[in-house]
Length: 345
Image 1 (cartoon, helix red, strand yellow):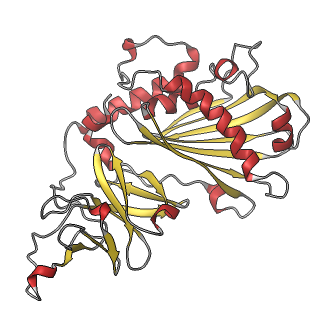
Image 2 (cartoon, rainbow, N blue to C red):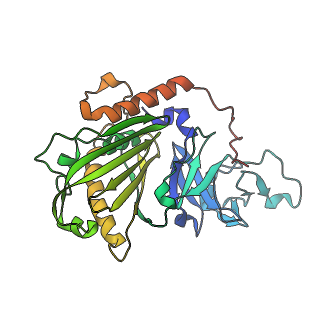
Image 3 (tube, helix red, strand yellow):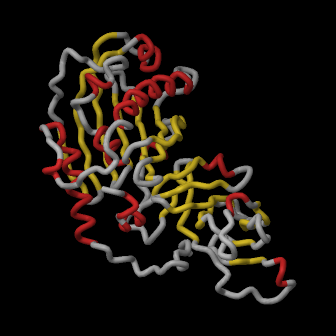
């Protein structure tokens, strides 16, 4: 599956950048092969548009923000968050033609990140109840590109057979290669959810992070997959600590994904520092990255193209759901023509 060849993927929301990246100047990003410029408008809300001026195709991300509008560095044309040209210095007061406009996209802030949808959204941005709970703190962890397909990362997140090998140095128990069966497994309209109890090894580093004795323990894991490339993993330990990981593999192009990850925990900085939490999760993610960046980026949706075992059920469901969604929608567009992808009112 090449993500840039699936128009339907434009109809989902993706986190593309931390809000803090937009405080100084406009930024560029590529989403599903589409070059974007991101900036803060007059009221301080994020805005997104195609990173090309309609005049001579200069990159708007190299320009400036003037009164909440993005100004082209080439001839000074300015565009608002809806893509409308609001100033052409060379016209000297004459009416700006309505054709002077750029493609603008739906854009909003959620969980301290900028989210963008390139077309009419099929569903909302995933809701994470813990993010609204004052008993939880949010820790930003990773914002970096990986050379792998988002679907590979999503499948990996629900693969109970890999931790004892890939993560043998961090928390896996290699002596117990047979993974436990899920307690519950449920397909949802826009994804799936799975609950399971996984035996893990609590290292000396995790002893401090989890406020638990080192050694063998278990963690109750509740994973939720949101079409197409977002997951949450809520881990509950025997002492009541909850460590919820949000991960998005935002598709840059066919070969790479922007990894956006943060965690939510029901403890305090005084008990466990954010630095320590990030350091352990970094070690775990680097183990995954080393494997995933060696996989094929063109993930087959046909189940017969790769071999499977029982623990691959979540990945099989993901492939079937995506294949069914693409088949049901075909190549039908949402009725929005180029140049008309304006942000919602």
